Length: 409
Image (cartoon, rainbow, N blue to C red):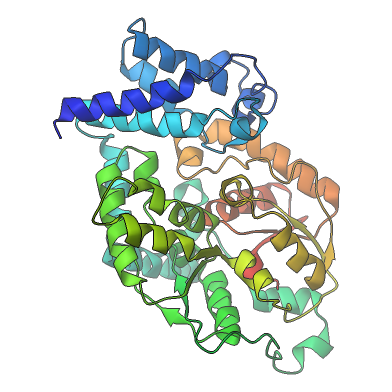
């Protein structure tokens, strides 16, 4: 396909979506960006109007227009609250791809990030480098909190479980799977690089309930898809489809990964060679807490800690997985629902690095809600959320800790 044809294809897709916007403004009060920066183009309605202008030729596709369309969390809050359910996030992704095709690249920064994430060797090297930085205490020098320290499960139990729970080994879960079921773990890049203790606990839990397959998978491709590197996304998707074909269930402890993998089938719907394999792959994907709840998993401990949950956008709105993590946390401790638990924390992939001041303003509202809940631990299921919430914990002066759900249950 010619490059100009690709550009037209992405413009057409975006046009079909934004033409459904009735401009009612229902998205304004719920958009985290509009709440942090009260100007029209922060909202879905504003972005849809800019997109309309580009499509109708009254706004030129300049870098300034592209900047407006890039200023989006892709959190889908607008979609959930839109009377017409306009898929503004999908329109923004299509338009970012249009600009990437038009300019020949999404930009040096996103190209470099994409190259890192699609190279498994570089991901492993980065994980090792971050481990060294943590041991030497130099991790705090890494910008944007991308090398956070972890509040480990061992530290968590030492703080809240008491001596009785620590005196013996953790009992095995009574849950049994069908003998033929083959669950495989999808290793997310962010979890592997930044939260090794949580990744270890996820694998330990999965091994306690199934004969777990460990696959040396490649990135789920969400960073590439979000920044106009669709070719890289599709190439990695094909690798992952082939790698997991023998698994009955594919489980990921990263909400962004599981959310992306569940939609891979849709991206190959017009590809006769990969259509069926991609659809079969997506149908096998489950989020970590979704899978554990489905099989009746019982948390390893119940501790005397007040827990609350930050619902990642890619988990709640992206997959409809809302009650499962909360059910697990209610069984693991004293659960408290905080205000606006499902509102974005401002992380959103690389958004917190691209727009640190806006992300900080959004995060500060989250910090206040966590503090007001009285929880000692805020739990989530996304590495970018964990990065953001660790910043909030530091800003709170130590009023709460941050953990992945695998470290708590």
